Amino acid sequence: MNGAESLIQTARTAGVEVCFANPGTTEMPLVAALDSVPGIRAVLGVFEGVCTGAADGYARMTGRPALTLLHLGPGFANGIANLHNARRARSPVVNLIGDQASWHLAADAPLTSDIASLARPVGWVREVPTARDASAAMAEALERAQGPPGQVATLVLPADAQWEDAKGPTPVARERERRAPDEGRLDEIAGETREGTTVVLLGGDGLGEAGLRAAHRLAAATGWAVLLETFSARVERGAGLPAFPGLPYFPEQASEALAGADQILLAGAAAPVAFFGYPGGRSALEPEGCALLPLSGPGDDTAAALEGLADVLGAAPAPGVPARPAPEPARGALNPATLGVTLAALQPENAILVDEAATTGTGYAPFAWNAPRHTALGLTGGAIGQGLPCATGAAIACPDRPVIAFQADGSGLYTLQALWTQAREGLDVTTIICANRAYRILQVELARAGIAEPGPNARALTDLSSPVIDWVAAASAFGVSAESVDTAEAFAASFQRALAEPGPHLIEAVL
Image (tube, rainbow, N blue to C red):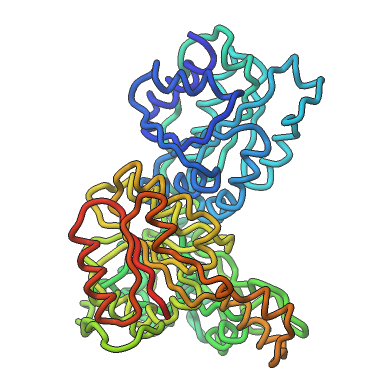
């Protein structure tokens, strides 16, 4: 048994089932090990950002680590944007990165780089010195990744640490349980919130069904407002579940939503801050003098903490969730509103919706909680190009559930190679491209900066219409069935056809 085989066998024994890979010469022993050690599905991504984004989507849906297999520092660098998103989502991801043979590093060959320095910003890193250390390193990486909370873990594996003889696999410790709420802390928070206005900011694992229902119970008993963190790794949503608004993206609107709060209860969420600094603005979004009260953090059981606080406050059992009117498909020309309500009306029960629709998503958001029950995955780190890969990984994780990639056209171009992987693997992913043919969010930001009449360079840098991108042709080139629509009726018909047929489909929704 060589180092690569001992490492892969350690992963398989620990329950790892998928490796999203774009390997090269320095990873050939690991590629061979994926055949000699059966049980791990190898999925090829023709760009590393597809591999890392797919691993993130898989991990969000299963809660278990996925592997990526990447080629040296440049290959890892190609995938780092979606590892940034995975870090923000606290997804358990393990990266295997081949390096030059240890005795060849000093030669400074063209592809040699400082891989560990590239990897440290997105998580835990270990450089594996010899084949004898490979299996123990893999066990540690899996333990680090699975948390809780989950995190990105990276192993840098010189080629000789892969091909030389090694010992057998190393057992992996079981995942630790999420921390139960501290009763003393619950009593403190109960006292701190008895006076003044409290807002609950809900995030992390608190966005599952149990957390939503616990927050509903607490809000019903206290009258507290509940807001969801702006971009969530995963939230259960739809008919029958308590519905709460999200904290707005733009800082002025977010500050307005939090205005009047005397204390903000952080339930699985971080303290609210602006995404960017603006002239004359603040980083913090809470009002001056508002207290931030941490109830639960990333490694805690947020639902149990909310229930525990409700008990301390003497809250009654949660009332039923009032029925909400189901959305109806729209008619006429496509725009964010007609597209959004039609999608919400027609999306199937138990779907997974990966939302990177950007500005177009504002037309869907008002109807999302009234749509059939579904799981939504968001753009946690703001690094665009996440949607198509994340949908790919989610579809591999949950082959019995329909996956919808609600995708802006500009960010979709970053990782459209994911369509090829969807076709190769026969995944049931329906991609909706919101084709406004612009970086619309940048146009909005120009207007917010007071630039009412952008000059030729500003217009050129925010425009995607010259030439018009032929999404149907691009999808077809990758083996994905596609069509273009420009009315709500045509979208509805195309969407229903896509859901009824196996395999991936793409709909260009021209807005």
